[in-house]
Length: 319
Ligand SMILES: [Zn+2]
Image (cartoon, rainbow, N blue to C red):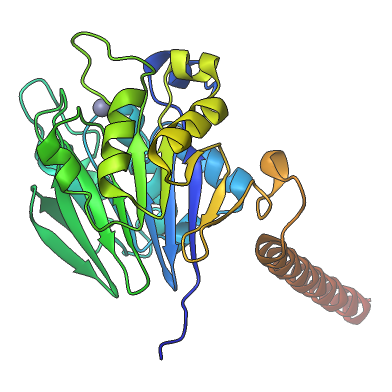
């Protein structure tokens, strides 16, 4: 009988297309997956630092950074996140797991990742579809994705408690859907409400097909485009749930999902903008930080007094 590890999925962003991301109608900082002591940051798009601060996520705790493909809404903030993780390279740590384009570039793609920041990491791993990498207790399998970025991937996280699949950006095919089989939790990037000619991402109808096949315990749709937002993702998720008989939720910025109980807390554990009610975990973290700052202030004060005392006594001696 194993001890249950704590686990959370935190959405630092749920925006998909350029319109939504450009206007920040939904944020675009990626997804945080906490599994016990490990923290995985998936697809750090624009605004990752702000969203981490606003949701009480400590990026220093990132064990690994994962990039599914080299598009701006998935990895624009890769360098700033590495900088935050490592204190500007002072503390070399963390692993980058990314597709080939994100590290080596490809035709018409220069990687967002700069070599200077790449060297702040302990190591980086280039994944191709079908390849696996183990990080502590978690095995990550790279999934095939068919997208305009030629080497785009999805990820499957096989953890001691559950299996989570993340589609990344991809069009639908039966072969792609089959890769998500045996997932307890399925996160699908679904920017489009209706199938649009020449688009290279999932629409609602594709999501229904995939969820019906995989039958996860929980399906989460995210990465919304303008039309999807206008239609109201909550309503659409309910429709998908009706069609598939699978519990389906629409992600919201700052949303926390406990993948073990499948319970959803709408920003309850988050701070600042996304706080509905202040939660215990983050509150405690914030309290600890406040205590640290207080301690530091007291220390500085003491030292200042000491210096003053010394100078006073010196003054006295001089007199
Ligand atoms: Zn993309």
